[in-house]
Image: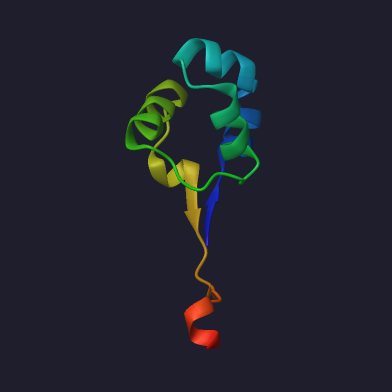
Length: 78
């Protein structure tokens, strides 16, 4: 499982999503989804902008926790 640490990094730096959005041009919707771990992915340019703005590495923004994910495929049910 991939998890975003954006909420933690923002709290540590005393920043709000609104300020980061205004300063970086990244939409509040995107930042909120990342902070709440509701995002399906992140564009490399967004990751780069956040890393530069927050002065962190991708490793500090994103964590990997190994786990097995199972999906149901309708074709397998037949």
